[in-house]
Length: 340
Ligand code: COA
Image 1: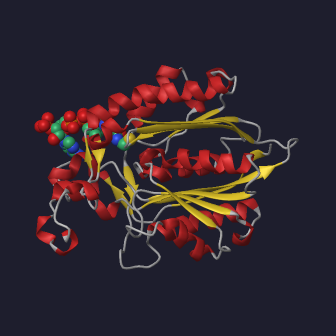
Image 2: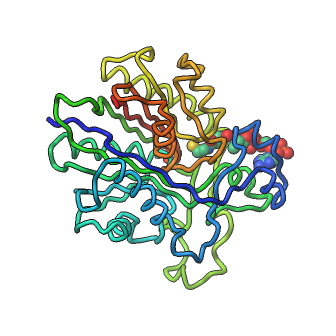
């Protein structure tokens, strides 16, 4: 069996910084409320929706190019693409094929993952299985989002729209020799679909039960269906229970303990959730990495952006034990434990 090694990493966020103060010009909110509830001070938003360089796939391409260069590989060396997003360029086809084309890869497989905040964990788990089984050698795993296109920036949507931001992160997962450092030690994935509607965007979807000619009848689409709905308190309570569960499961199945961990990178859902989990798990400040203060919640992109920044800042060294965990819409949650 092969080892799965993170060979390259990269991230990209748009230049356009939107502060809490900026949001307070659009809706009835303020820096104090947002900071106290979420820890977020600013996020990035796409500047120009008519710019072909500002799509979910182009953000992913920019992150992927950095990851490829850090790995010392070209797009032609890739065997497979796994793309996690909830904000794709098109309803279909998914972003995977668009990235294949933009990067100039051969006609390799491109898989799209729809697991929202847990998307990158699910994507890494699939990539790991392909690498370990010897099916593929170099897999591009990417999470990218443009949330700002589909949020309600009126007072009605303020409980959700202040939280989310845009960006992309990527890693190259490669097969390595048994004597090399670096391997994914355990993964786990979970879901509980009975809570699907606690954090949901309903449109466009077949469950809405409108006429067969839905898209030709614009007046029947309402705000509640096109914008995300989130039962914030409910999500919070489940997140702080599921995070520790999945973390302990990942550690136990690899025969490790919390004390063995060098770095924990949680999905950047909300700083209060991360702090609650940190305390519950007894992790010191230097063993957790958060950057939600700068980027908000970027859903499938949040873990690879944070991982890329932590690596850039040399907070993770070769041989370190690193845990990635996520919880989000679905509900879905899971973890990836690896030795870097
Ligand atoms: N600015 C100012 N006031 C706001 C606001 C905003 N952006 N959004 C909501 N409010 C108001 C509400 O209208 C409400 O006012 P009221 O008491 O007069 O009715 C009050 O603040 C409290 O709202 P509530 O929704 O109960 O706040 P909360 O304390 O639950 O915090 C979240 C809301 C979303 C920050 C919190 O529930 C949370 O973090 N949940 C986890 C969600 C998450 O992290 N999701 C990520 C996906 S995994």
